[in-house]
Length: 242
Image 1: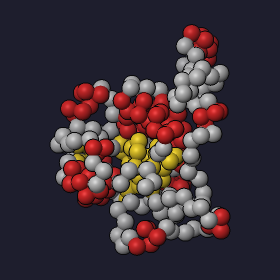
Image 2 (image 1 turned 90 degrees about the vertical axis):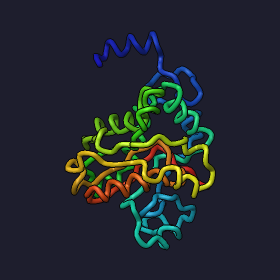
Image 3 (image 1 turned 180 degrees about the horizontal axis):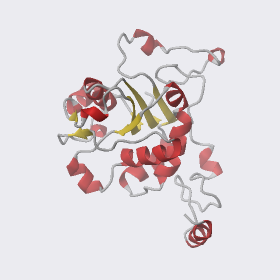
Image 4 (image 1 turned 60 degrees about the vertical axis):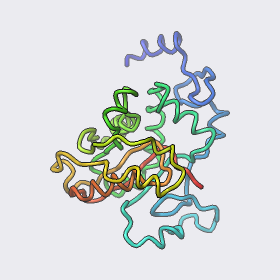
C-alpha cells in the first residue's frame, strides 16, 4: 500500500492492540503492556516438539522431552508454536477465528516466521493450512488457517497450497471434546488429499492456529504422508500445555 495512503488510513482508523483494543502508534499488533503478558515460546525447548524446558542447563543443547523420547514413530518431523495458549493469547486468536479480525493474521504470521525458524532451516517446500469443511467455511466466510498460510507465504517465500488437503466430512468442533480419545474419534477419516502430485516428495509445513491434543494435526499429517509427502512439520500460533 502507498505510504501516504497508509498514513491517512492510520489517522482515520488508528491501529489498535488486538488483545485490549488500545489505540497504538505503530502496526506491531500488540501494545507493550499486552506484549509483556504474552508467553512467547523460546529456547531451550524440545528439539522435536518444541515444548519449553525450564532447566537452564538445557540452553544450547539439542534435547528431547520425555514424551518424544518414548515416541517410536513420530508422525511429525518437527513441531513448533509461537506462544502458549492462555488468557492473553486466546483473546486475539478467538478474535481472528470468530470475530472477523482477519488483520490479526498478519501479526500472527510474523510470529510464525520466527517460531518456525528451525523448520525453515531444515527445509520446507509447501505450506498447507488445516482445512475447514465447506459448510463451516460458508458460515465463517474464511479459514483462519488459510489466512495464516497466505500471510506467512508472503513473508517467507515458501508457496502455500490451499486446495490439496480437504476436509470431506463435517464434524463437531474439537473444542467441545475435552477427552483426547473423543477428539481422535471425532476427526478420524475426515481429511483427504486431492491433486496428490502437488504433495508428492514435498516437505510440508502444516499451518493451524492452535495445537491442543494434536489429534487434528496428526490426522492431517497421516493423510499427507500417505499421499507421498516427504515429511510433515506442524507450525501453529499457539499451543495448549496441560
